[in-house]
Structures are given as structure tokens and as C-alpha cells.
Image (cartoon, rainbow, N blue to C red):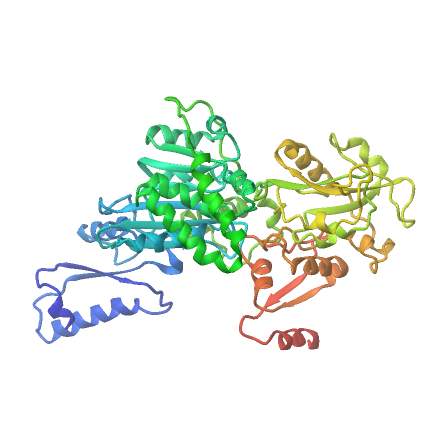
Length: 583
């Protein structure tokens, strides 16, 4: 059957397998094709054997693009093609990978849109809703959504295609007609406009007026906008959401702007469809919720403004580092940092560890900066109860007691006070500091704080405030704070929350959701038991934010010791832990 389907004029065949068979002479489909031709040739059913080469593609969800297909055909045309090859990876160990160049086969009638959002901000849900609306109007639609195991707090990418013709593309968008950036910090960290088509429309959610946006953009974004003649629009979606009582949910606001700018559908008709969808989705939650979302839709167009772009980009800032490395660690720089920058597909095979070993305590270098606000400590109001630190899901709020003489070298604005507990001496000082770059803005610390400012009852000992005005000062204070010596554990009464929270946490800055109810317990356990702790982790949220890669929240202390952690996916966890205890 195979030989009947292949023209007799074929001289070369490339067989692509989406699997790897270690120890075999070749992959299954390749061997089947070779055997079919060999048997036919031996039986004189074909006059000659074509040249047959075998390759692998698409492993571990690697892309398979038109450019890769072209590279395979180019290899077949060579007088002596590689007998074995790979596409989708850079194989600098066995040197089997083919050189792939950009190659676009997209139909001209297809509208392609890319959206970059923050996990839990509603971007993915809004885009799925947009697909339903557009598909309901008779157009062909396609959606593919890329996000990691962080259910909230990481970047999500939505790939949407719309067309009056059937959509044949089975790969991610490389040339977008529309790019929506729903979090301003993303355009400061990532080269998001490299996939924008010349003349494309760019929608940016920026916490600034439209006439301030250009000066805030990094140099590479400015260059893309000018060279490709991109049309840039901005909206302060969070301000609109706050006005309408929507909190941080900006999905319907940004969705409305997309329909208004993209012309995929008539803007008026699309907005009517969005409101129908809102009634269907939120109707059971009450009329007020529906009205608030209607308000977001109506005010979205009012808040949308074009950004005037000059002819010359000017000297804009460089992209912010995605991964802030304290030292030139080769592995962190060549592997982890690239994964954090969404450039993992460019990592060569030689950089991957042979035994799968990855370093610990690497979430501390992420510095995601996903919140616009962070808690600020007021030492004059604080009663030093430790509750804000106890409830913090990401260990961004910490307290230390240290020798007062260490304040002499502290950075500007570093606050400390006399400890209230009799456990400590008059020469020691108590301080609470916040890692504003790691804070997720959940506000649980403020809700938990029992101390009230008697001169201003709207304030507590810890209060949420905008990060931008205090960012640099807060970062300098945190960096000094974490280097202060840890207190001697034997001095503390670990049965008291306020003293237990002075212990060093060995679990920090995880990828758990803002306001997570699990991680405070995990962090507390690591404080109470320290490097003597052994964890049998059941599969679920805790195994994902605890054992995920490329970064891990479990850390080692200054002695190089940490928590022993393991997870068994399909085994009963109680039995798994019992085995640890019994051994």
C-alpha cells in the first residue's frame, strides 16, 4: 500500500518520527518505510531503492513550522544528506539538527493576534470568549494558549487566528497582525514585538497617560515600532477597572479594545455580543456584577488613546533583566535565565544537565514584580505579633532581631525599633522588611494585622502602597536585610507565633497563587523544623509550586543544608511517607 501511494519518480524520502527509540536502529516509522522498500526491492516489485533518511520532530512539544519542513526538503536536495536528523532543537552534541530559517506560508486572508497576559487576570478566558463570538459570526477560528504551571502570576500567551477560509496552520503565530500586551511590566522585560507584522496594531495596558508611554518603553520596543511602522495604542485598564469596581479583572476592558481596533467584526456589533456574553456568564451572580462589567466595556473605548511615535527611537532603556543573578553561575545564566525569558527553545543540548540535577533556591532570582502595590511597615504602630509574616503566602515579609550596631551601615531609610519581647536585649533591634519585587499584592498581611494607627484609624502597622515611588529604596533595604545574621534558634520559643516568625524560612517566593492558603503552612513547617525536615509531597498544587522547574522555592541555609523533598506521582502519599519513616 505504501509503495502504491508514493510516485515511482521519487528519489529521496525523509521519514519524520515524533518519538525517540533509544537502542533501536532507527525510529518506528522510519524502519517501517525502509523495510517496505527493502522487501519490495528484494521481490523485484520496485526497480531501485530511493534514498531514505530519518528524523525526529516535535518532541517535548517543540514546534514544527513551515521553516522546519523547508529545511528537511533542503536537506533532501543535497548530494549527501544526513542519514539521521532532528528539527526543533539545537543539537550540538551529536550535531543532527538542521539549520532552520524563517519561512512564512500563512494565507493573506488570515488575521493573526497575539495576547500577553498575567495568569489570573482573565486574558485567556476573554480570548476564548472572543473565539466564540467571532466563530458565531460565520468565521473560521483557531486558538492556542500557552501558560505554565503557575496558575496565576506568570505570563500567558494566547495565539488567535480568524479567517473566512479554513485555517490550516498547526503552529504558533510568528507574524501577528495584532499584539495585545495586558501587563506593562512584560514589555519592559521581554521582546514582545519581534513577532509583530509590519503595520500591525499594538495595544498596551499602561499605568501612564498616553503621552508618557513612549518615554517608558525600552529601546528594542521603540525600534520595532518605528522600523515596522506599528500602530500603538494605550489604555490604563487597571484605572478603568478600579473605577467600575472590577478590581484587577481587566479582561472585558482589553477584549473591548481588541474588537474596537482589530476590525475583525464591526465594533458596535462586537460590543453588543460581549455584553450578551457578560449577561450569560455573570447573570447568576447578580445584577451589580453585570453592571460593573458593562461599565468596563463602556469606559474601555473612552480610555483608549493612540500613542504618538517619533521618527527616531531615541536612547530608550535596555530590557530589564528577567532573572537577576547575583553571580556569574554558568548554569543559571545559560539555562535557567533563558527559560525565564521564554527562550528555552534556543538552549542547546549541551547545556542541559546529563543527570537532571537542578540547583535549589532559584525562585529568589525571579523578581517577577507582578504587583503594583506592596506592604509598607510602620514601626511606631507595630506590636510585633508576627501575624503578617505568618500569613504571607510567598515569604516576602520577614522579621529579624539583630545587634543594633549593624544599623550603622544600613542603607538610607532602613527602619528598626526596640524589640518588645523580653527574650531580647536592649542593645538589639527589631525590623520587618518586604521584598517588593517578589510581592504578589494579595494584601493578606494588611487584613491580618491587628494593630491600628490611633491617629489615623484607616491605617494599620502595615499598609499597602504603590511600589514605584519606593522601589529602589525598598530593594536596597531588602538586600541589606537578608544579609543580616540569622538569630540563634535556641533563644526562641517556637510555640509562640511572634518568635517562630523570626526563624529562617527554607521555602520562599513560590509560584503559588496570590493569597494562597497552603504555602503559609509549608513555610511555617520549614521554619519550625529547618534542615531536619523530610517531606513526602502528595501530587497537587503543593507538588507543582514546590517541585516545579526551572526554579524551585526550597532553599538551603548558609551551611548548605536544606529540606529533603520527594514526590511520588502515582503512589499513595501516606504510604510513601510511611516508607520514608520506616527506613
